[in-house]
Length: 220
Image (cartoon, rainbow, N blue to C red; front, side, top):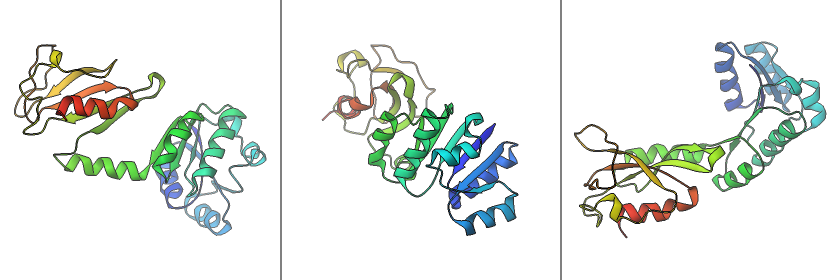
């Protein structure tokens, strides 16, 4: 694959190094001359000095034939612009943007960025996995359907313990395909399945229904 990476800082450098090791064709666009020189000295002549937000720069590096553009500068606005120009002017099939402010994630998605990576959210989700009482963990996003897969853990003392799934009012369109039960094999629940303490309930729902789903499964 031909992958263009906008931003030659630490993230761009190590990402490029890994992708080169996998045999991909990589080109980095970086404004800073010193960064470019270091990258070219260490990784080969793969860094082009320029502004990845400018259509003229993207044209010069052959963005029209790129399979993917990844924008990993330290500026959310630059990453958004680079992805939008690549997507709409050069028809790049896949764009990925690093975001520093998690609040920008919804905006990026609305404006057509295919994938957003928030280091803040990644860290929070890793913390969530280590905290048994954390109410809801994001597992996967089904972008083209506007859905996500989440996990809700039923804590000790939850008012829903002992209730059947059919007796719990779930958000519209939400389904529960799997329950991971302590010391037992994972089970595919039926409407009559009774919730137990420490159950890890895997659900498919809309992002806007997260809070309602959490309250429905945990009570309160």
